[in-house]
Image (cartoon, rainbow, N blue to C red; front, top):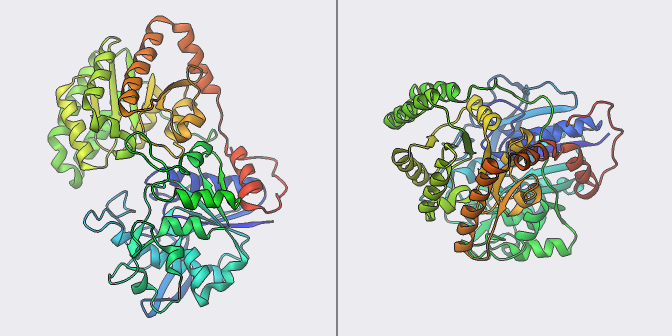
Length: 522
């Protein structure tokens, strides 16, 4: 039997520990490993809140800032009790909850300041737990994004953690654009402050654009035994330099990725999707669930400043309950540059799509929170356009209703490492219209399971989005047979974790495959 440790900032295998798609991956891959007959342990920060119902396993003493820190590791229950999967959280008062999903901090004046501190403490605690055998004899450690790469730094340079070199370390890139760049010194949230006196090689850790800073995404790429991207096309994209806004590629790290590829350490393996034990809601509840979510948000102190807009949204929904639309286009996403840059730069494009929807008595329903600039843009659009419904919050029931009752799911992402939303929409038989980039290109077949747009220039991309959107609506209206065929093709398409994890074993983990259990988790 092989034993794995997953180290991440998010884990949707436990309650209230998810901000994005990484949480889904860290939930699903350990379950699939357990289904193969192996053992998976998952550890995340406690963020001052996740250890309350846990059982204390060990108090670890770790060297930080020239003194010993005491870090507590707790075993916590998962959402599901799955034999072979164990969940842990690390608690210390300085590992604090952020303002993004109560996980990440947003430090606009000094990016990654707060997060560097908590993840430095977290990684050192995980390193001590590995060294002291808290998880048993681990064969593979699977790290996720920059938050965890300091474990590789410790393995390489810290004399107390050299034993970690005996373990295979795999590093997954979920979003290369977020790199965790901090100064080497002269700052409280710097490498030298938290790990004073270490003899390390600056060049092996530094950002090529800012040589006085450590780039923690680069550390993961340079020091891991295997580097993994969450789709094959994204792996190819990030080996090329970025040329925004038309193309987002390696974001300054393309040379490191090309080198990892030459060293046969870089692999692109598509994420899977869960097709078993799916959380469901009753059909026909989209608008009632929207109203329920709006009332819930109005009770939250953090939403008080949005009260007028939430009431405005409620009025629009009530009218739709009396006169339902014939066609629903939707998006569910965090409001960021990655997801909706095209609409911020070209709001007239969104207005054009809304005009096209009027021809089929359609609405565009967008759910999300995030960047205040995007929230303000979409609030203005909602006031201006009756058929644009912006639900500015988060609700699992409402999200599930959107995926269930959508006619066309829209993903105009500027770039997309893998994407999970398109898989969830397709799972329900909903065609997806998306930018032909990264994992979206790997999962959607144009005019077979959905619709793709692209272009060599920004103007061509915007024109392509509008043209393909019109094509989809025309097909819905005039070619119902073809539309049903695309829906059924989307519904039948499968991206299973069984296939993805089988590729992990062969390419990333390089451990013997355990005898598979009779009942697989999908």
